[in-house]
Image (cartoon, rainbow, N blue to C red; front, side, top):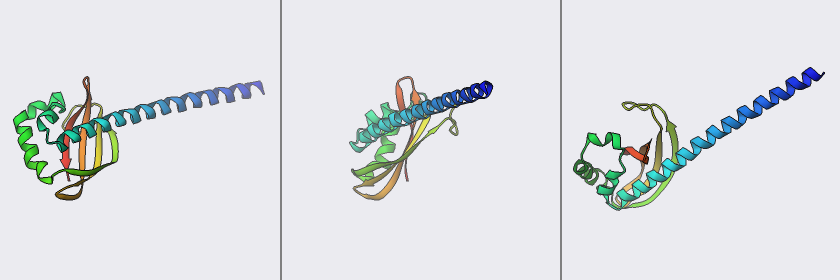
Length: 144
């Protein structure tokens, strides 16, 4: 009888520890996604304001070598500016990613927005961010 009680108590203790660590991991993931989503929203505000020079500074440091600031500005002027002002933007969702094609394993978050522009019907924007020592930085931006 005592043995059964000890086994039951040990089992309950192990389950509660497992649940607690799972909850901590889930809370940590949620906190990372929230921080990345906030960084994406701040970065998109820079694009909305046409401040492409400052937006370039938010690009992931390791990946800036792919293009210069001038190339980034020209790209945004050609790709983003024609849509006009963002009239509304809503987060559709976000997802943590450890492995991402073409880049080393790390802490990445993909954030998807539903956006309505002045000169474009409702569309989707995706910002992929990477967690670096300086904080969340933009790795990729797409408008669909």
